[in-house]
Length: 167
Image 1 (spheres, rainbow, N blue to C red):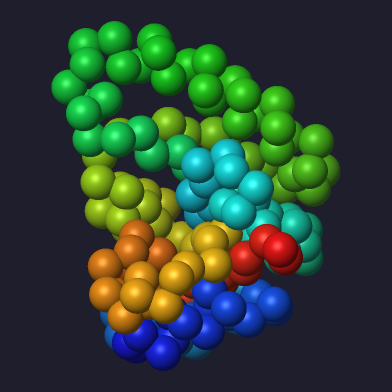
Image 2: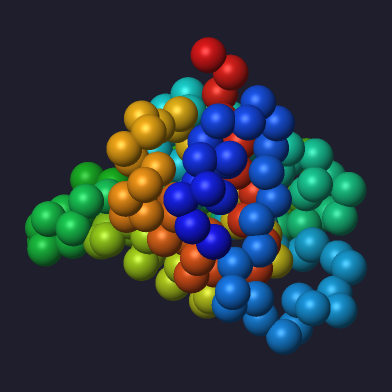
């Protein structure tokens, strides 16, 4: 992994499957996908990978966990759960029609550091695949290795499928 890998998944017009250095032993011989994690900020860019995830979920009758992570400062708000419910319903409304009928889906709102929360949810759900819609980044960004997508790919215990919106 390095800036070249991030440059590839941010510039190629096709989806890119990355396997980082922390691949869990349970996945090394596994040929099925049972749990898929889809973090989204509801932007067009983040949604670019969802059609691929829906196809994979349909093929394996996998469970989809759709995750939206609010900023760290929202975590300390005592009314965070009540404020997050309309957002969870918006996610459900936007994505439910595209969840394959033979698959289950859950819509989760969390708050905290984006890459940390994505990795924590992936670990807790024993995700077999994480799907990230990524933005085309400026050259300087791909050399910093500090983006959430890069941190997720490097820290994930499962493969990460990235796709960017064609623009």
